[in-house]
Length: 440
Ligand code: ASP
Image 1 (cartoon, rainbow, N blue to C red):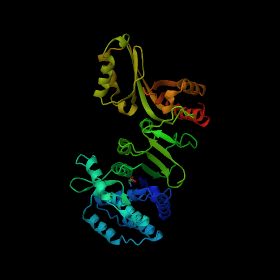
Image 2 (image 1 turned 60 degrees about the vertical axis):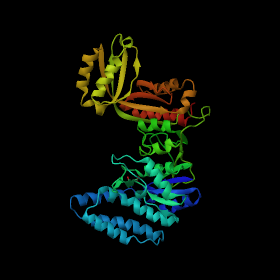
Image 3 (image 1 turned 45 degrees about the vertical axis):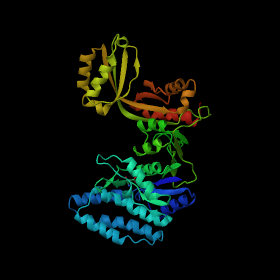
Image 4 (image 1 turned 45 degrees about the horizontal axis):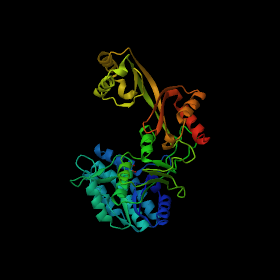
């Protein structure tokens, strides 16, 4: 059994609805479908969710949102008409408008985008509509009550073919609550986990996760297969992949997550799995490349530091006290560097340096700013000899000055710190040398 989630661009109009139907119809195991609200049809178009939030803002300031509401209504009516659906939403829309006059919560109003979208899609597919409010249960602290939600969905879905609106659930007092933006991904993951799906298919408008940022690298290839651990490394360092809460429910149940493209349904997309047994396979040792700008490196040198217990602890305690998270700690004998976010450290820098001076009494402290981190991530790196040497050599040959090097203990990644001005060049060198030209 497969659980599918379709994002806003897959539901933007009747044409996209038809694509969804042919995808669902092509495979009888595609039984549970989660939908977002209709997204943009063209570049300057509006997402339904954005329009609903705009209505909420108008209501808050006592300004009429009748025109915006009419636009929303029209979008759905157009799809109903063009898909030849029998559904008549006029009563529900009139009731919603009434409720908006009397005061509706922002979350409830925003949730109607997916609610109506699911109603339409259910009729179009010939599936039953199943409201997320019946099973996605939040606790008062805003987290999901997993056991109660899973149990409720198992009872409600019970082998039926259903369409479920994404993005929202209910609080214990019955009020509607939405996830943060993009949260339909989470609804899909929760449904897949609750129903022990064989796969969670996340249908979007790209053919999977790309191996590098397309704004930096020209037409990067999509990743075919990636482990959950690799994905975590890539998204931590800047790759924009899925809504952050998405992975957890499916990973916990060992359910593969397949990212697919509604506009290219024959492309296999990216498959995300717990384990991939291809250590000795040929091919690039890099699964993906990601990176981020905006780091500072604080370097502390002190003679005898290596043989003096507790020095690093003292340094970390000072940073923790100032709520600065340390990203990486490359070290040498009697010298340690701390890679931290420039934004986080900038306001407290002098205080931190003063405390380090006082508590650690180092021979030298230096701060290097404008550092970018670039990570080459790949589960196969651990099984290849000389990978890091090749990476550093290529970067050097291409004029990228490496300011820092670190490798995770599981050899899942090699991380280099470079000057911000070299950031894009470093990513392009890695991609062109080790992926495009396939130097193994
Ligand atoms: N419609 C919501 C949003 O635009 C949720 C989603 O699409 O996942 O954020």
